[in-house]
Amino acid sequence: MSFDKKPYESKMQKTIEVLESEFATIRVGRASARVLDKITVSYYGSPTGIDGVATVKTPDARTLLIQPWETSMLKEIEKAIAASDLGITPQNDGKAIRLNFPPLTEERRKEFTKKTAKMGEEAKVAIRNLRRDANEDIKKLKKDSIITEDDQKNAEKVVQDLTDKYVKLVDAAVAKKDKEIMEI
Image 1: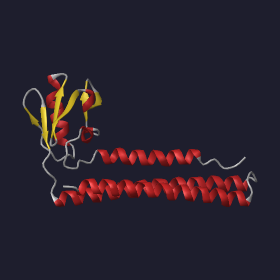
Image 2: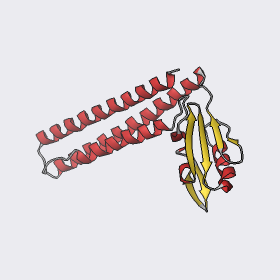
Image 3: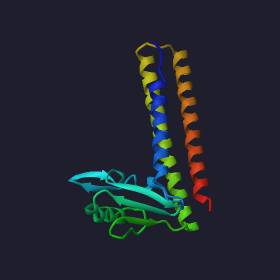
Image 4: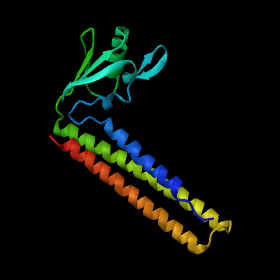
C-alpha cells in the first residue's frame, strides 16, 4: 500500500472552486445576478435565495431587474437587499425591484482588491492545512511500517508539489479578479 494523493487533490480543487464562487459575488461595475447569491428572503418560513422567488434579469450593463413571482414578496426582497452589504438601494416600483449599479470609484476598487487578497489568503491557508493533514497521514503510514522512509519522502514531495500547484492557482485567480476589478 502507498499514499493516495487523490482525496487531498480533490479537496484542494474544491477550495479553488469555492474561492471562484466567492469572487463571483464581488461586483465589478457590471450588473450580475451572482451578487444576489448570498442574499436570502423568508419564503413561507424558510430562507430562500432571491432566484428561488423571482426572475432576475440584466436589462443593461448597470441594472438588475428582479421580478418576484408573487407581488407579496416585493417588500421582503427589498428589505433583504437593503440589509445586505451590496451598498445599493433597491428601487421598488410596485411590480419589480431595480438595482442600479453605479460605476465603481477608485477607492471602492481598492477595497475590493483587498477583499480578494484576503479571500485568496484564506484559500491558501485551507490548502496548507490540507498539506499538513496529508503529511500527518504519511507519517502515520511510516510509523505503522506500511511505507518505507523513501516512500515517505516521495509522498511528502508529491504533497508539496500539489500544494505549490494549488497555491499558484489561487494566486492566478486573485490576479485575474484584481485585473477585472481595476478595469474601467
